Amino acid sequence: MDLLRSFQSPVLVLAGHFGSGKTEIAVNLALELAGVRQVNLVDLDLVKPYFRCRLARDAVVPRGVRLVAPEGELSQADLPILLPEIAGLLRQPDQTTILDVGGDDSGARVLGALAGAMPDTYELLLVVNARRPSTEDADATLTVMAEIEAAARLRVTGLVSNTHLMAETTPAIVQEGIALCRAVEARSGRPLRFACAEAPLAASLGDLDVPLLPLRRHILPPFLHRPVTTRLSV
Image (cartoon, rainbow, N blue to C red; front, top):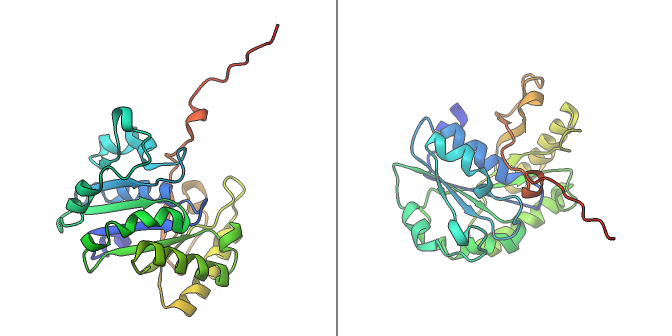
């Protein structure tokens, strides 16, 4: 994908409001880049236990992506126990390290501990879903951006449009999200880098005025993998 190859920074950070879809984007970006260079996918989401990059381990590791997340008995740990290892990866200019952080400013605080290790050319991309309550218009989105920047002690460098309503997403909804990001771009000076849509829908969108990343779903909450049992009271 030409868009991804055009990123000059070895570090891509994805942040956004709850439900923006940044974790799925992080996984798809890692898989897209895996055939081009060494990719490290870092799970820094300390907020949502059911939607984390570590749940896509079986999809990314066989493709050569290095997944950096707690393992074994610590696989569900909420402590940033891997920060020294992550700081080392941020200093590898010949690799691409993608960081998925938790939603809003509460999730972005962990970036503050890594701010000193960030290269000067890092990318911090704000993922925007215009159908979420806290990013439904430009004013709200700019507020979320400011809160994330303050918590992370890093500047947002670009926007990603990922407006969707899951299976009910239409081309018009995708266009609505792009229009919102263009409005935020005009007011903030942060460029819209690309838009996203699930792969079947992406194929029907035609030409857009922004690069498009087709998404394939890899993150499912654990309860969808378990059989449901019912206990009857006697």
